[in-house]
Image (cartoon, rainbow, N blue to C red; front, side, top):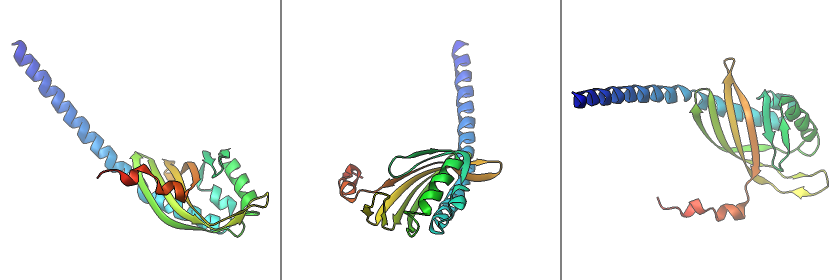
Length: 175
């Protein structure tokens, strides 16, 4: 009888596990809804940059969002994102456009999506007078759905170093 009891327990566990897996699969499928939304956010974000509209740029962020720029400045909250972009888009980036190269977007949980964005940024001059050449940049963006809409909760911008990119060990990774 002890063996029969264990068999019933195993079947119950397998059944519960199967139900749990079915629930997880449904969750992953439901989370897929954020991919189109974050892709649209990215395109709209770049359009706001290219229009030098800092307020429209900041409107893509939740009030509690954070942004780390290409040189490591960390802005906390939509107000700081707007303030910094208002200053930079009216000065050093006034004539600096961004061109979308690619978006790799995926849902990671219900109401959460990530995007890795590659873009080309025009040359510009820094506040201390250094001329920065055109560069390929990579953004990491996280969007969350709240109140029925999708906005960015975090973003980080990095310049792609072409010399380092050529030495990326993943390029030599066996398939």
